[in-house]
Image (cartoon, rainbow, N blue to C red; front, side):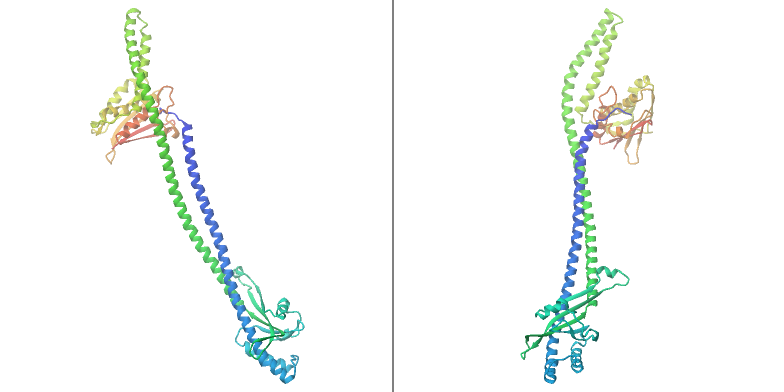
Length: 484
């Protein structure tokens, strides 16, 4: 059944602020996730910095240890080899196998058990290796590099030679190595134990740190993995919180916007109702006078000019139609409070069916009724509910312009609710129109106010009930009134 049309402009205007509100929450989610992603990236960078700092600290400790060992080696070699060799041989000559062997013995005793790869002594006059625990290195030139030059100038220094990174651990055969080379000036030692100013050469101590370096890389990898896992968990937790908060806020925004739209709509309807009530009231009195005058005029014409009384009847019919329209406006603008009393719903429905039967017969509409076996008694306002039934039946008759069938049926649900359904086999309507049929002034008929179903809905809701519509194009429509 159809008695309403659409007002898309109002819907579009109401939809725009809602869409804008939802879009703002979508942007909040977007920026929240962006911020969490940025936190994850910066945390990874911070973890990398921390792990690198740990690596530098461990390497610095190894360097300090090597410098300390080199200083001790300087003391031991000078006291146990240089001084005795000068006294015994008159000068230092490492080409002498006895001196070389004696020095090698002393150095081997000093570094025994200290995980030192090699000890090398460079000449002070030229960059040549005078002694090394690696025999193949003795006599080679230009192996000291910049570090040798710095040590000759009195500055102890170190260099790391390493290969492989944290990602090398992922390979099946990781090639990881690290060697620390420490260079210190080989100085004379005073009787007090302090180092003198004279530099006799350069001592290089090479230490293999591959195991420590591998451990550092593994630590670095663990820090990165743990940080990534922690941040991922934190990210997922925060994402869940933000998502849930966004859903809650979005739902509240939708509710708030819906409420605002409803309040705006009610406010517009209130103003419109006030205006309609005022105008209708002003029209109703003179309209009654016009109708009464037309009826009197009809009677006089019948006597004076028989056969022309149909002109006066047209005035009477039109004033009657206008009076019906004005009454609908007043009913909508000034809804009544129901005066409840015990009534049989089936008797009220039967009264409405009997009243409309003549109109239905003229239009070729057959009205059938199926009543529950027993009376359905409820506390209702009989006149108001009769008006609701009447509006729905009239609506069904009007939409079946070429005739049809209208079935009115009463029943009670298992929960004790009273159900009154009106089902026709008319043209039906689309979902869009069905969603708006109860909107005031919504009509697609050439004649009509679009208030019939809106008034019926108001009456049902005043009784604490509900009214629903189901319809499909070309398959008819069903209205169901549910009363508690």
